[in-house]
Structures are given as structure tokens and as C-alpha cells.
Image (cartoon, one colour):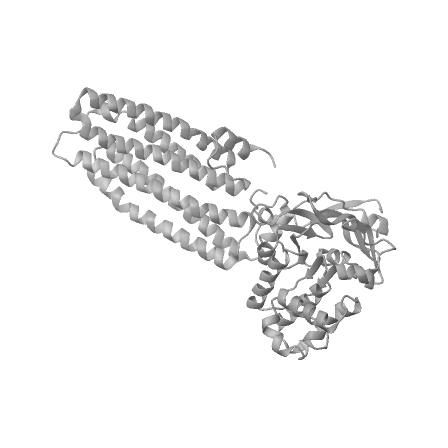
Length: 296
Length: 241
């Protein structure tokens, strides 16, 4: 009885054949039911981050399954996929944000340049300075606009004088495309800004500590189209100096801002490729079904 | 990834895509009729039938405009991606070629009117001897590519694309024969030029049918096979993913 397997051809029709058993599976069985090959080229010639065979578990539940991919220097890569596919979980592995979740375990290898970021010798605070993050909802500190940007450089001891700090704050706000709008009101609270401005303030805060990589988790989902366009334009400019990984639910946004796109489904990396190819001629049926709106 | 036959989550999108495709297929049927009628009018020396062909071209033009309007609104409202995007782009290009084929049918009809509505004596049968076999080939190609479109049949599309070289060669031979007649008897020049326009129109129909076949291969396979040798086209189109 316990060995009887019923193959369930999921409604997805694309070959995700989970085995459903009549008796509960041991955790080892659950996690091994599906190891798939990613369609497309996972490597790039100039990787900034290399991820190999990454597994993520929340307790017994496996959220990411054997994901391997490179993130190229100075590229914008978009992670797309339906809710719960693991794209945000995977993003959060890249600067160890998942460390804050007690039940979360990350296996496999993630290297930033040549450094294994899960190595014991790695200082997580330093890592997060190198790999900054911008969240879905703008979350400025309850401090002044100036202090929001100055806070990071100060705790990292990056500047020696007030003049240096002023310059760094100005420069960061300038690069985030916000300086003109806020230079006359630097002492006002960050929360007094509009949603789009707050998000750009968060980007200024992220780049103030001179990161190498910026992770963005749905940075525009709470913004109107004009604020969204400004952020997207900003992403394009930031690409010159930073590597950007963006998780987005908007396929149009992924298409607009990224050079490569990775499609996640149920914790698997299904397909990765040039953005143009993914959106005009995806090679995996699951990708095709997702981008054309055939799920459900 | 080949085109998906699964339904969209938004059912209305399926309906709109099906309507667009049906409109193009309907237009294709009408264009096919136009060529048949134009060739029949020519063979039967039927000037009034030829005039009907000329008048009906307006309907085809209208369908082209309608298809393009519908395509633009689908792109604007649905932001299609993947095979949906390729479908809409291909259909929008296919109708351009269908409309041009319609124009070629109209051209043949105009030549028929010009040839048989005049006071001068009709052309001798030998001047027209290449028209019927070339017309058959052109019509077969058009029928083939519309058939392929209806079934999303890549093999059929490849067959159509292969047929174009043959039709081009037919045109070259027919042209040489016409030149010979004209040199032998300059009095035939007037009629011969009309016939030349007719066979040129048929040759162009073959080109448009080949274009349609290429768009279809792009639609189904996502590969752009324009401007390459037909053997490379066949290889690209038929190779497994």
C-alpha cells in the first residue's frame, strides 16, 4: 500500500509529474521527488555571483531545489515566476537575508567573486554592504532624509568628516535620481516623501555603502507608473556600476529592465536565457504557459 | 517552444486570438477566390467577371485594415508574449502579403479587361499558353500556405517555400518564350506585354505565398527563416528542438 504510487499529471500539463503516495512520505522522499535540468545557459563569461546546487529548506519543506546559475557583472537579471515559486527566497540567499529566519537552511554553494558567502569567516554585515537590498515596500528609517542615507556609511566607518559625509549623501541621492527633489529639505523625515521618492531614497541608502550588487525584491509593486518608470530608468543607469538582481511579478517590467531572465517554478529554476528570447520564444512549456497567461 | 493549445486564464483573450486568426483565414479564402475568378475570367474572356474581381478587392483591403486594428488593440490591451506575441505579429504580416496577393489578382483582372475589351483582335492562344500552368502553381502555393496556417503545419509551409523556386523558373522560361514571339512578330508586342504583366503577377503571388510560409514557420518555431536559402529554411524549420 505504501509503495503504491499514483502519477499525477498536474494541471500544468508540462511534465511536472509529482508522485503522490497514499501514505505520508519521509522528508527525504519529499525533497527528492523532482530534480530537473534547467533549460538554457546558466553560465556567463564574467560572473559576479555563482550559485551551484543551491537548496533551501524552511524546516522540512524544500523551497529551492538544486538551483545553479551565474549572475554576470554589470547585468540586470530578472527572476520571474508565480507566487511561491521561490524567486524571493532565492534572492534572499544572495545576501544571507534568510539567516534571519530560524527554520531556514541553505545548502549548496554561492560565491560572490571568489568568496563563498556562507563560509564561517564571512562577516554578514560586511556581506550585506557588498550586496545591498531594496524591498517591495519603501521602508525608510524614521529619520531625516539625510540620516537615511548617512546611516550606512557611518556604521561602516566609511567617512572621516562631516564634509565627506555631505558629499557622499549628495552623491548617493544624485545617483538615485532624487537629489534635485530633496536637496532643499534634507532635514525633513524620509517618510514625508511620496512612495516613489521613498523607494528612490531606499536605493540611495543602498548605494551609499558602495555595494557591488543590489538585490531588488519587487521594487515597484507599490508604485504608480510614473514612479515605476523613474525606478526603471534608474536601474538602467545603475547597471554601469552595479550588478542588479530584480524579482518582479510584472513580466513587462522584467522585459524592460533586464538583460537575462530566469523563470522559477515550484522551487526549480526552469529556464534561464536572454530576456528577449525568454519573452518571444521560451523553450520550456512551463515558461511559455506562465508568460502567456495560461496557468490557472 | 511550439505554439500552445492550452486555454488562457483569461478566456476572452482566447476568443480574441481565435477571432483574429479566423479573420485572416477568411481573408485568405477570399483572396484565393479572387485569383481563381481572375484566371477564369481570363480563360473565358469574360470582361464583366474580371470587373467583379476588381470591385471585390476593396473587401480584401477592408479586411486587412480590420486585422491590423484588431492586432494593435490586442497588443495594447493584452501585452502578449511568447507564442501569443508571435501569433499576432505573424498574422499582422501575413495579411500584408494576402492583401498584395489580392492586388495581383486585381492586376490580372485589369489585364483581362484591357486585353478583351479592346477593338483589336484577341491574342493568339500561344501567347497565353504559360498562364494556366503558372496559375495552377501559384494557386497551389497559396492554398498550401493557407492550409498550413489553418493547421499550423510547418512541413506544409516548407513544401510551399520549396515550390517558389520552381515557379520562378517557370516565369523565366515563359518570359523567354514571350520575347521570342515578340521578336518573331512585333505585332504581338501589345498583347505580349499584357501577358507579361499577368505572368509576373503570378510569379509575385508565389513570392507572397512563400513569405506567408516563412511567417508561419516563425509563428510555430520561433525561428526567423527569411532571406536564407530554401534548404537552410527547411533544415531550421524541421529540426527538432
